[in-house]
Structures are given as structure tokens and as C-alpha cells.
Image (cartoon, rainbow, N blue to C red; front, side, top):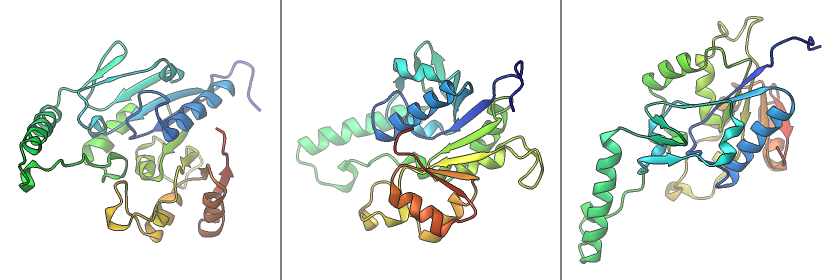
Length: 236
């Protein structure tokens, strides 16, 4: 039972989405989940360990709904009021290359170098040593509970300050599932992510609980990852 004067529990959301507000289904759900955390008397924090999430956007402008988070940090980005600015030359080179490619295509150039190259799906990119080192610092004092936005962020559980998976101090952790990735129908042309069933089971199995938005996903968790608590929550 919570003591009357006990400090509010901190809930750490780990995400690699390009989150600026309720602009699509997955970001809307995550923001509503953070709102539910607020309503329960806890404090939501958002940490984003990959600077790649900006894609070709040099500036991300936060919409008012992002204020649901008590703190918001993105690795490698500079905060200027409501704006997050990237100093990375990679982004500005990508913008210039995309512009030159578009001009070339309008002029009829069909060479491979003139074709548009989509930016990588950052949510599913492999984690780097820099991502992990940054997250270990960023999550200090903010993680009584940890929530991974998509199963790919379960890697961030390794950076929680709880002294390993088998101690009494282990921080409870959950995954917002969003999708059943191994069952996607896009095949090699899928623009999002391709994972095997075994890979998906292994990632989901790193959590104590998995929050599924659709019944088919909840059923998969119950059958394939029975040691994890499945929570069906169509509404956050």
C-alpha cells in the first residue's frame, strides 16, 4: 500500500519513435498511456536514445500534448524551447542529397544515384554502444517502472539501474506491442521491419508484461510467451 507521504513513482518510457505529438496511431496510444500514468498519480518520463529518429528533419517541434511527460530527452538533440534541433551533419547531407535527387528525377535522370532512398526505420535499428551508454545515464532517478515503446526497445531494459534480472530490486518492465511484426504481409518489400517468430518471442519475453492493443496480439502473447503477463488494452 502506498504511504501518504511516499514520493510518486516514476515511469520511464523508452522510445525510438519520432514523437512530436498525437500525429499517428502509435504516438497517440503512447501519449494516452502516459496520460493514464499521470491520472494514476505517477510521473511519466520519456527518453529516446537514438538521434537517428529525426530522419531528414533538422528540427522537431513539440506539440502541446507532449507536455504530459515530466521530462523528455533525446540523445544528440539540442532543446530550444518547444523545439529539438539536431546538430548532426548527417541530417543536413541527407536533406541536400534528397533535394538533388528530386531535381535529377524531374530532369529525367533514371540512374540509381538519382533514386530516392528512404531513411531507415529507426525503431527496429540495432542498438549501438552509444545508445546504451546514454540511456544508462538518462534513466537515473526516473525508473521505478520501465515501459518499452515497441518490442525493439526492450534492449533498453539492460541499462536500467536494478542490478540485473534476478534480484529483489528488479524494476518492473512492460512492452507496448503495437503490432505483430513476424506476421506482417509485406515480405521483403516491407518498409517497416522484418523479424522471425523466434526473434519476436525472444524480445517480448524480456518484459514482465506486454500491453497488446488488439486481441490477436494478446492471444499470441498468451500462447507463445506464457511467462509474461499479457494485457489487452485497446484504449490506453
